Structure formats: C-alpha cells, structure tokens
Image (tube, rainbow, N blue to C red):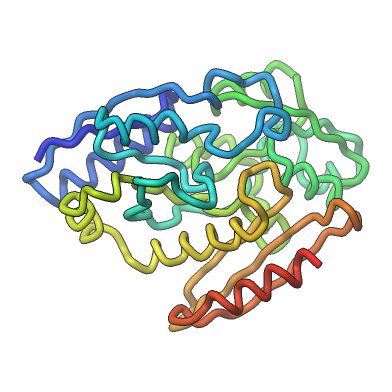
Length: 293
C-alpha cells in the first residue's frame, strides 16, 4: 500500500512525520509512505499573535484541504494544533503516546526562581503560558516570540528575551533537549491540550487505511485525546484561550486536571476530577461548566 503523508514544512513537523512514517513501515512491511510537504497559514504568518490572526485551523487547514482533494492520504499534526472538532470528511484515527507533556524553561542565565524575583523578559506566543507567567512571576513580563523552534532559539541567543518557553516534547523529538534548563511542573503550568502527542488524520471514507493504522496505536491514547478535545470544544476551541488540560489513565480510571484564566473575573482557576472512561461525557460537561462559571 502506497501512502502519501502530508506534513507542515518545518524541521519539527518533518521530524515528527518521519518518526510516524518509520514506525508505521516498521510495523507493516506492506505499507510504503512518501512525505508531502505543505505550508500552512500559521507557517506563512509569523509576525502576529494567535489572538489577532485567529487560531482555529491555523496550522491544519491546508493539510485538511489536501486530504479532501486526495493529494495526500494521511496527515500528521501536533495534537495541540488540531481544532476541537474535525472538518466534515476528516477523522482523527490514531494518536501517539505522550513523550512529555511539560513546558520547558530555556535560558542560559536565569532559573524559574530568578523570574519570580527579577523583571525578566519571557518569550512565548501562547496566551496560556503568558497568563501563567503573570500569575507565577508577576515581576517579569512577556514578549511575543513566534516562529519555528530554531528561529525562537536564535531570538533567545540574540538577546530578544531572557527566557524562552517551549514544549519539552518538540525539543526532545529534535534531539536538542540540552537547551532545557528546567521542566515546569505540570500541576502548576498545566500543559496545552494535546501537548506531547501526535495525531494521525485521514479521510473518514478511507476505512481500510483507518483500520490498518488503528492496529498500530493504543486506543487508550486516542480516548485521552478525545476527552481533552471535548473539553476544549466546551470552551469554543482554539489556542487563543488561556486554557490547559491533561488526561491520564490511573489504573482503570482517568485523572483529568485543567487550568483556566477567567478573563472577566481575573481569576486563575485549577480543578481536577476523576472520570470513568466508559461514561465520562456528563461529568466532563459539568466539570467544564464549573470551571467557566
């Protein structure tokens, strides 16, 4: 079976998609995958914040169109880039295990404790990380730093900021985790929804490919991703919301923790709940309502 795999045209996206390609081919010798590189709106517009240009489908829309036009058969995304609901005709069929959900603190000179005591410039494009910095490091300030991982690291090196916040997972996949000074505690810096996982998307009608791929990945990982995305949908979706959440299996139940900055009430909110994986929808809805109230 010949498969065209669509990926964003960046070093991290290419590295992640190559890992998926190699894994699938190693598990099924009848599958051969060719990578197809596609630029997204998020790649082309790196000068504005997500809140200004909109975040829904910013890194996925062009790949969705390529799927629907049959130019590719499979798209690989960072799960956190996916919108809360999939476009008609496209299905998230499988999800990788989480390599690391935590945020990374990157600086050659300054620790996280330093930022609590001193006015440091902290670079990030994430509204979630920005609000968490305001809460945890009120003396420091945030500067919008966008671009690919190597671009952001260069901006740090050039002195555009004192500290850079990135996802630990991306640095690990690139093999450059030596840049990480500290991993931020996930109970405080609750990660972005889907952070650390990769999502595989196909046309909903391509059931044969879907069945082959689902055999290679854990259904538990897919369920956790679906729960997190349902939670995101209850807030309207998108990465322009100061929201984080993480779902994890603990024995036969799921622990679910979330962070939300309530803009109107100026409150940082954290809540946790234990969910039954066989009947979680109503409990998750009530949990979301309470967090937003």
